Length: 196
Image (tube, rainbow, N blue to C red; front, side):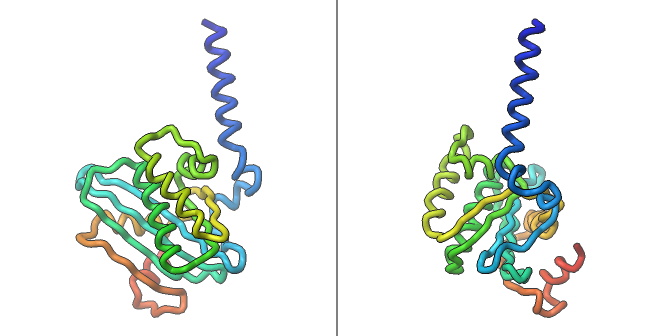
């Protein structure tokens, strides 16, 4: 019995160490907690997905910014369906890539607060069959871009995305908004951004 417990503890320790590799080794922990502009010429797209089991809805919030810290585009998407949180996060990432492709951006970085999805994408290995098709689409979409990186960020670093997804769950229809920091303060997206 003790041997089994010891092996289980060792297994959990190895899993913790594996989870810290990659992103955590290359990006200091503090940077994972706040939004940092991408390198010049790169567009950073933050994503968030959520479900409301009470309203039988799913929501996605997507925010695209450039290296000048200008908010270029925001998307709030609502669907009336029973959702799976992990699948909604993967779908938000796929949609973000499709929108980046439509905008003809050649260099993008996708950031999500769902670490397991980011790990599945970066390693190319996923055991969740629910998300496998979406992750396959993501791998195919990567081919369009000259540079396409994925990174994890804590929710605290994606406040605007999180507010958008909460708002999306209350929508009757999907909304696509385009704005920049130079936009009028009467713009609802600018107002939402200023509340953060």
